[in-house]
Length: 215
Length: 200
Image (cartoon, rainbow over all chains, first blue to last red; front, side, top):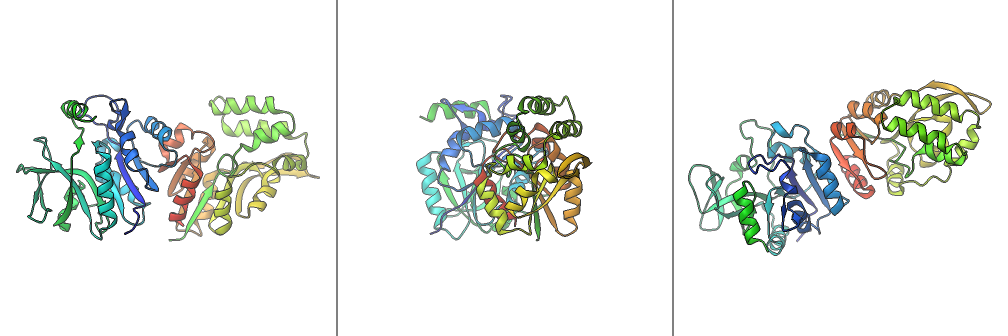
C-alpha cells in the first residue's frame, strides 16, 4: 500500500459541443462547478496539476478560491492540441504514479475513494470506464476477468472509456498517429478497469442528465 | 540534468516589494507609489520608471536604503531551499546592487542585479539596468536547463530566455503577459518549493 501523491486534471479545452462559451470545468451542477466536485475528490492528494488553456485566468482564480496549492500547467495552444498533449505537458513535472482525470467528468465521491484505495494497492495501471450512455464514444471491449482488451469507436460495447486512469507503468509518447490518450494505451492491453457510475459532460443532453441524477 | 533556478527578488523571495518598502522607510512613499502605479498600469516603461525612482532615492545614503531592507519579511521556505542548493539558485533582480547585496548575501546565493555608480556610499547614477535575459544567457553557459520564477513585466525577458517559466503569484497576481508566456502558474509558497525540488 502506498499513498498516491499526484493527480492531473486536463481542463484546457473549450467544450465546444456543450455550447456554453465557457470552460466545461466551470459549468455548474446544483450550485457547484464541475471542477469543485473534482477537487473535492482529490482532497487527500498532495500534488494537484491542472492543465489550463481556454480562459486560463478565470480558471486559475476560480480554482485558487477552492484550493491554493494547485500547480497550473499552461497549454497556450489549447485550441489546436489534444488532451494527450496537455497531459504530456504536465508529465514533464511529475515523478511517480498519478491519477489522470479529464476535466469534464462528474464522479461520486464514495466510488472515487474506493478507486483510490484499489489504485494505491495496485502495482498495475487501472483505467476508468462506465456503462455506455452515448453513441459517440470510445467503447471498451472486456474479457471475463473484467480487463479491457480493446478500444473502438466502431462497435458499441456495454462500457465506454471515461478519460480517467491510474497510471504507474504506462508511458505516453509524442507519436503523431496516436494523438489520443486511449490510443496510446493499446500496447498495454489488457488493462485492469474500474467501473464508475459517472457522468461525462459533453453535450447539453449530458448536462441535463447529470443535473437530474446527481443529488 | 543540471538545472539553474532564477528567482526574481520582489514578491518572489521577499514577501514585500523592495522599492515601496525603502520608500516608506525614507518617507517618500507617496512619490514612489505614484511612479509604481503608473508603471504597473503601463503608462511608463519599466526602465524610465526605474531611473526616476533611483533619482528620488539619490538624496539618501546607500546605507539608509540597506537598513530599510534588514527586516524585510522573506519567504522562509524558499530561502531555506536556496540555502540547501546554493550552486543552483540565482536571484535575478532589477534592483541596484548597493541596495540589495547585503540582503542577497544573507540569503547566501549568487545574484544578478542592476549596478549603481557610487561615490562615498552615495548613489550618483545608474551604471547598468539589468536585462534579465542577459542573466539567463550567462547562467546557461554552465547549466543544461534554466528555470525562471517571477511575476512582473521586467521578468518577461527572463521568461522568454528560460526553458521553464513559472509565474508565481503568492504576493500579487502575475501580470497578464507573464500568464501568456509561462509554463506553470503557482500561487503558494510550499507548492513552489515542492515543484522546484522535482526540477533540481
